[in-house]
Length: 180
Image: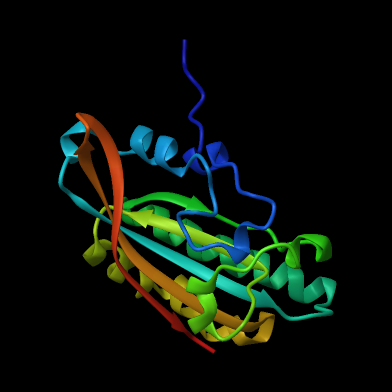
């Protein structure tokens, strides 16, 4: 009997205002999901986490929405071919009532209030850098200002450590910057 493979990103449960929170605080169960994803022999290994905070342009046409979805899917498919992408969470744009409920001061350096957060976890920083140079990713990146009013990146490392003799994900080396 074959077991259906489940995308680990589907197990993540974001807070309603998740896009206004600093990753990893946007997901109350991120520790559990990543611990299931990372192998026990990963103890001490640094995985790369790349978070994409964005503010979608208002009044995108249906054609523009479809184009965005298509480019995003192409970039995701290209990243999967690499074999080093472990998780991709594609965020949804916050509804108006969710946008006003929470602001994390650690995101202030972005210079805008995000309404969406997507992120990926790679086996290493080198793998993430390689994935970012893929043709599909570069193509989507050059068109991003067409769909987003603002965008920013949060880069960090995630390491499995032992805390009180239990595995724990330690996030470190955080760097945040606005793209446009």
